Amino acid sequence: MKLRAVAMTGIALLVAACSSEPQVEIEEALGTISQESFDATTHFLADDKLKGRATASPEYLIAANYVADRFAEIGLQPAGDDGWFQQVPFITAAIDAESSGVIIHAASGDHELEWIKDTVVFPDAVRDELEVRAEVVFVGFGIHAPQLGYSDYEGIDVEGKIVASFWGGPESFTPAELAYYTSAEAKAAELAKRGAVGQILMWDRQEQVDYDWDNYYDGYPAGPRLTWINGAGEAAGHYPERRGFADISPASAAKLFADAPISFEDALDAAEEFRPMSTALGVEVTLYQKADHEHFNSPNVVAVLPGSDPELADEYVVFSSHLDHIGTKEGDDEDLIYNGFYDNAVGIAVMLESARALSELSQAPRRSIVFIAVTGEEDGLFGSDYFAQNPTVPQGSLVANVNVDMPLIIYPMSTMTIYGIESSTLGPPTTEEVELEGFEVRPDAFPEENYIGRSDQYSFATQGIPFVYLAEGVESTDPDIDGMALAVAYEEKHYHQVTDDLSQPMHWWSMQRFIRATTRVTRRIANEDEAPTWNEGDFFGDTFGP
Image 1 (tube, rainbow, N blue to C red):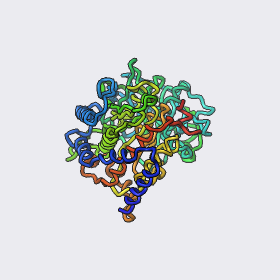
Image 2 (image 1 turned 45 degrees about the horizontal axis):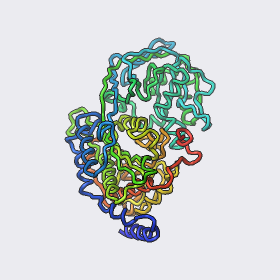
Image 3 (image 1 turned 135 degrees about the horizontal axis):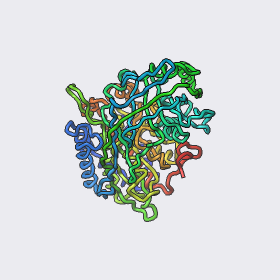
Image 4 (image 1 turned 90 degrees about the vertical axis):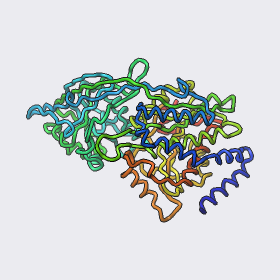
C-alpha cells in the first residue's frame, strides 16, 4: 500500500497549495464512489438474463431503461429527443448467400469463387440487388494521403473499374493517421470519389499471419450488418457508386493476378515494404449480391448535469461509454451468451459512479456535462457517430469528449493509458488529474491494435471535437505481477468471448482510483476557463477541426 500512501500525501499537499480550488469538496464527492453501487450495475448488465445486450434487442432495451433509471436516481436531467432516449434509426442488411458471389473472368475461363472457402460478399446498406462487371485495378492499400508522402492512386485511373486492395495501411503512419486512412469509410470514400464501381479486399502477409481465412468467416453471415440512416433515408458511410464489395481468400487473390503484369507475390512484397505498386490487372470480375433490409430504432441513453457558470453552461463536455455488446451465439455449447462484463458493463458502471460523484458537488462544474450510454458501438461506433452528428444539445456546443470503454483492471495498477493525450490542450490537465490518484501516464502499449479508432471517441474526433479515452495501464504496483502478460492473456482468451462474464477478476482498489481519476478529469475539463483546442499539427485537428 506504499503507493497509495504516496498518492494521498500528494493529494494533501496539492489541497494545501491550491486554495482557489474547492479540493475538500471534490474529495467528499469522490468519497461517495461505491463498490456496492458499482457491482450492482455490472451484475445487472452482465447477467445472463440480458443475453449480451445486442443492439436493439429486447434485452438491450431493458439495459437502456436500467441506465435511464440510474440517471434519474442520481438527479441528472433527461437530455434525449424522447426523455432519456435518443432513438437512433438503423437499417439492417442481411446477405442472401445463395444469390451473392464473385466470378473471375480469366483467360482460362470463368471461375466462380466458392462461398466462404474463397470469398464472402458484403451486402449493400440500402439496395436489395446489385451486379457489376468491370476490369480490376490493384491499388495497394487503397489509400491516398499525399501530405504524408503516400498514395496508392497516384498515376492510376480507376474510373469505371473494380479496385482490389489490401486491408490496413503503412506502418509509418501514426496511430491517428492509421485509424482514419485504414477505416472502411475512408477507403470507400476515396474509391467512390475516383469513379470506381466496386471493391475487393485481399489479405497481405501480416493479415495471413494474424488470422486464419478458414476460420475467420466461419458461420458468416451470423447476422445482418447495420448502419444508421438520416431522415432522408440515406445510410451513414454508404457510397452508391460502389456497386459491389467482397473479400477474397489469399488463394483466390493469386488467381486474380494469374494473367496480370505483376504477380500476387509482387503485390505482397510491395505491401510488406509499404511501397505503392498500383497496376491494372487486365482481368474482369463480376460482383453480385442480393440482400434483405429492415428498419428499426435503438436508443442512446442521454442525461445532462447542467453547468453552473452562466457564460459556460451552454458548452458541453460529453462523457461516453457504450451499453451494447454482441448478444449470443448459435450452437449447442453450454454457454452461448457474450455477457460483456468488462466490455462494457464495467465502462457503464464507471460512468454512473462518476456521474453520481459529480452530482454530489455543492456547485456543479462550470460547463454542462452530457452522460451518454451509446448503442451500436460493437457494430461500428454507430450510436456515438449518430449523436456526434445529430446532438440532442445545440449543434456546435460540444467542446470535449471523455470516453471509457472496457477498462481492464484485473491487478493492482500503477499506470494509465490516455489515448488522444498528445492531440489537444486536454493533455496537460488530464495528466495532472490522473496523477493525483497515483497513476503514471504511459504511452499506448499496443499501437498496432489501433485502439484510437476502435471506440466511441473516434466518432467525436471525426467531428472536430477534442477527446481523451481513459484506459488501463499495463504496469502493476506489485513487482511479481506482469500486467502486460495478463492484459494479453485476457485479449486472447476472453475479449469478445462468452468468458467475459461475472467470473472475471477485478481489483477494486485500482478500479476505485480509476473512477476517481475519470471523475477528476471530467470535472477539470468542465471547469477550464477556455474550451480545449487541437494542438498545432495534430492529425485530427488538421483534418476535422474548425
